[in-house]
Length: 74
Image 1: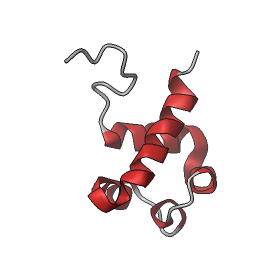
Image 2: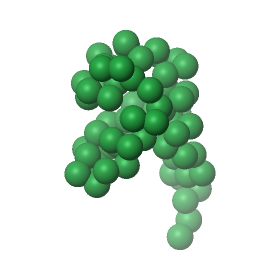
Image 3: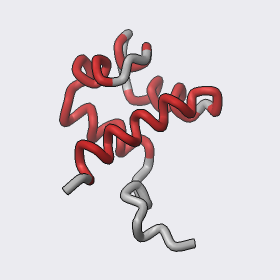
């Protein structure tokens, strides 16, 4: 499978969260994507646990799309 066109290829979810937090900060990130793990006592470990849960794929997609919109669009 060719992943050369996938902007997230080779980037781990932890890296995505850390880069978004560095860019926006937790408060702004929580405004952009309204999930509790970004708004109530936010930290990377809790965010990873939440986003890796298959029941929360919708939230993971929002995080990935924000990353692409922020860092990958030219």
